[in-house]
Length: 330
Image (tube, rainbow, N blue to C red; front, top):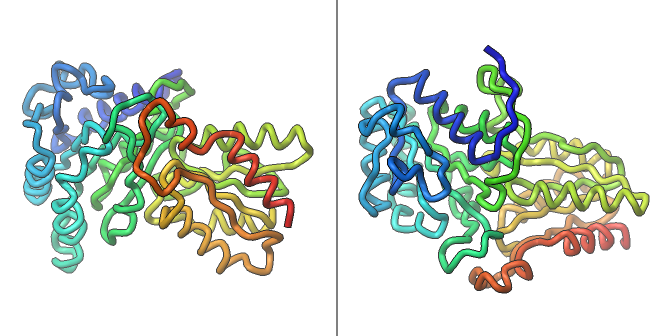
């Protein structure tokens, strides 16, 4: 039965996980403190109580072991969903993810499927200590064989986590933890909005003068920038990528061909970040439509700073609006 709810992004993921656990007995969750505690951010709250310790498994503090076990389970027909407690803790499992999980389907000519989902709370804005505010999505997007996605709204979080679990491919599911507590409407009919949204960008605000491309935590910032630009008589279209790999280039290109200008925003460093790939593809496909170079706004090419100055590092409203102004200066 269809039901409309107002949920936080964290709760929407919880509801999506619950629905997947209910509909597919091969789905199981794995991670540190995800059971009785419900996870550091309480995203898995109540799931072990309702589905048992065999399906919501508290693991040792060993990310490589978690992923290695998940790969074995996937090869035996299960659909494991692993939680990495914080973004910066994913690197002990980097070898398992990039040299094993990403390549098994290709190496076997498609005979083997490893439908593992890796949930990664990522990004800044929560005043955390070192190794708790990373944005490593480009490292995994660079690795062929992995889907890399990030929801920006509770509706997408609810829909996309279910689609990620149902996918035959391994999926890195990056959750913008700085937006966990923001609320929005969620339609819980089936998997929610649309037939599939896992790898499809969407226009979240139409405009005619400039395309602002974002994903995950920076979509809300992009929408605020578009509203501010409107006060200055500039019509800014906002595109939420949703998927970082594969990229829905067609939606972005269609937008930029209409607007003639493009700014890409993400929290990760701009140097060799995913915005560079977007900028290159837009330049190739829209060269004769562009009125200005494609500009990027993101983190700096430094380690993530201490919490006291993280807001100077993150792409703020003022920094995005400055890029918008520069795009109109050419």
